[in-house]
Length: 119
Image 1 (cartoon, helix red, strand yellow):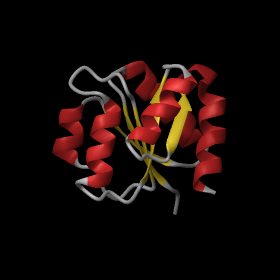
Image 2 (image 1 turned 120 degrees about the horizontal axis):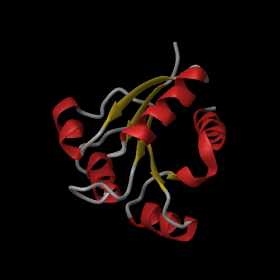
Image 3 (image 1 turned 60 degrees about the vertical axis):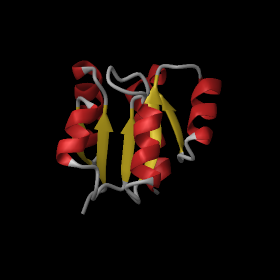
């Protein structure tokens, strides 16, 4: 059975690109385009959640922190953003998340990082 990944991002292009790359690499992927979709459909049952930081409704690191610390979602949670690495590192640490993946490095980097995380 393939590992289940949830990608949360407000950009349909990012969602489609990430899903295509990860599905081609053998993962099962669901996407959510808003915080409301996460609330409506949940975030349980995934091994990994990739959360965009700059969402229109709320900062993704705040949403991820709620998932981790209030909802006790056991998945690994990584921020997924174009923000500078130093800022992503700091945001992930402050929210007590597992880390971050930069969108700027492209789909091949995303797949490599996800394989490393879920190995």
